[in-house]
Length: 130
Image 1 (cartoon, rainbow, N blue to C red):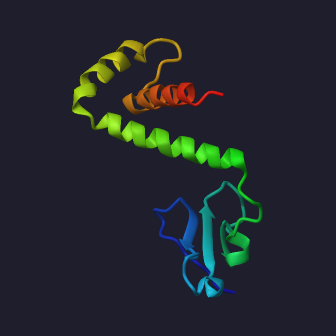
Image 2 (cartoon, helix red, strand yellow):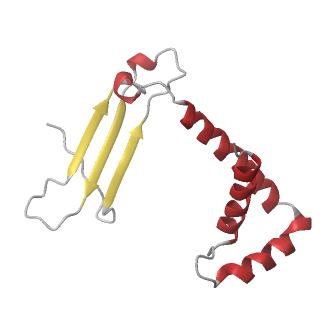
């Protein structure tokens, strides 16, 4: 049995060490390696796990629903609008002033980016009602 040892500075390891390139013609031959390591207050010293998965276990088994496609389009559109607005010099002063005015109110957004996201989401939702 193989054993992995982590340096003492690592309290937690979680995630993919390698992944499958689904666009590769050799995707069926590739493996995904996932590792987890957590220090826990137990008497067992066996806190590490390694998982190996093949293409079938990381490929989606259900079709993409229409609501998911709409959510993806909504997110992509709003993300592009937020990025454009954050870099628009002509709107930065007004956005910052509006953000500071609502920041300390109940339910106010705590970061400028979250404020702009909320604004752009409202704009998108109003434009696409119905």
